[in-house]
Image (cartoon, rainbow, N blue to C red; front, top):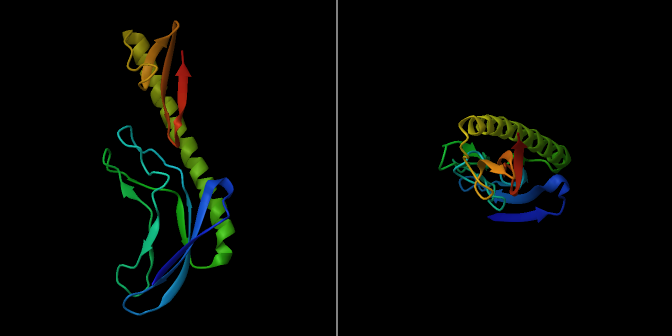
Length: 168
């Protein structure tokens, strides 16, 4: 038996789902809470990464109630396992701390990814200027000249509607 209920506590865009599962071999029922951040994290330039509406879940590999979190998928571009920052909890009183922890982890991860992208864009921009050869355009990530100013950009790792831009 499986029941799942989304809980309406969503600070920092962190999701919480309450689920009740029954182990197939033992019949033991367990209440669990899954806490995760729903926005995608891009792992490489070839894939979008974990999609915001991808669902996390739990599984019991041996049927005796040893529940494990399913929170990653393998990127088809780089092979890296990607997924949201997530926690599997077995006590409701752990939710608030887990929400704060998941939000903080994601914030730190996104900041690290932004720094890596900015560093890569600075190198790409310097090489494009040195070679006098654009590698992108206003529509395609990379370096290009815009009104006499060299610009390099790429998509934001956690929000494909936003960009990260460096100029020279």
